[in-house]
Image (cartoon, rainbow over all chains, first blue to last red; front, side):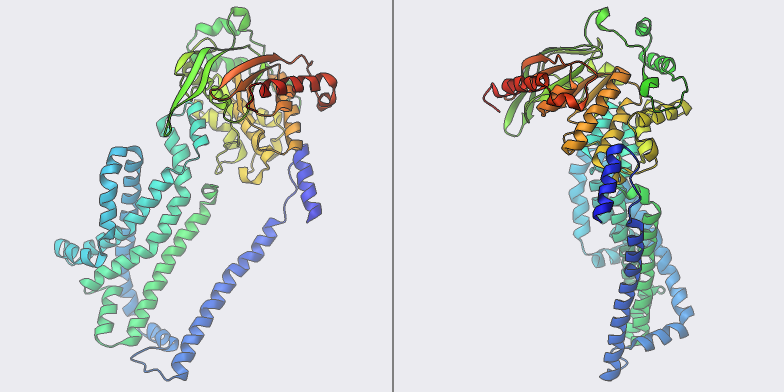
Length: 278
Length: 301
């Protein structure tokens, strides 16, 4: 370790490329641990759940065991897939709509102090209104189709993205702003070459909140008024004391939200070079 | 030769200069091929940078602050000129006045015979910041190419210029690296390369080596002198280090705080080229002790 350090320091002084550090190898070992430990934790929790239900003979209509839920899920996979489809459409469109609106309005707020002063509080108030209160209003107004669900999902994703992107567009290193001024950069260039890349880490932080948020939004809206979707399945199962169906619907919903989250993480990895801020 | 083009539109002049300064295509470590015909503005009358009774006032939460008062200064073409003073004496502010970042409240400033804003738009100066100010998402080469991108297009000539300045600062082998993979000294070299890529007439440096360890700093000082002598770029260097100012400069303005004023401008009579051995000689030490005495004179140090 000591010897390696000396080599790197020495090469720096001579202006020679530094020797390759042992970092990649260490990272791959840590990478395996990154996957293995969470899986081990999950398996452990599922085993505890299964053990609890089996050992204490918990009534199946109160709590289903993981095995029961799994077999119910496999037996009724077409039911779940056909109900996942509308939820997926609603949450994806809501996710897109809410994020685009959040980013665009963040841009307006960053470039216009007046708009920001006037409407940032209003946006905050909108965020504090319980979504279960807004959803029925939207359903009354927009009907029973996809649109109110998309609207609710968009509403849930909008605010965190707005807040994050306002912070992101303003998170610019002041020295870099000064540099752009000294280099006579135009406003458009300052945005494209400095503000936008500086905001990328904030964008991904926002998208990670928004992805599961959009799924929750779609399900809440379905829950209040629909005849299809995971939210509908949850209501139906609850009202008919169908514990395995309820648990399976929950598993499908959280699996889907997790997949969306994973896509965001994957996109972040692919855009690695933009994510090197700080 | 260049002076004939003085009347041409600035944009055109810049392009023509690039063409004029095109290297001979030779490959090698010799930084000489970046050199160009020294431009003597002084011969035409008027120094490179001139400040007359310049003052800067800020509005702060605690009321108005006078950062600089009555600064009168001539910096000659091709000079290595340092602004030396303690923290808060306004030396960085003075540099930013020249760079068209901070406006003057009183007095006059001219850069190459025009206002700082004209000089900035003509890309007449490069600026090196205290902590490198590199874009972390850009590779070394793309950081160096940034001024070229903003000046127009990144063409073959721009890429060649970037390669040359990277060679000049000894980072040719690291052009594909990201800033976070570099040491502090290397980052600052990238920053110097970026400031020089457009071949500016003036190089403005704001405590560029202030965050480096002493060994790296001494080495960077020597390299900077090599670059300066090979490019002939007029250099204005802000520092709070007395030995650094003495080692590098041909002239040093000593500033005192509250409000920032020039106490004296000292000619450093040591001959160039200077190497690190000079730091242990009697003339060098008597220079530093004189600068130290000037700094302490106001009772502020």
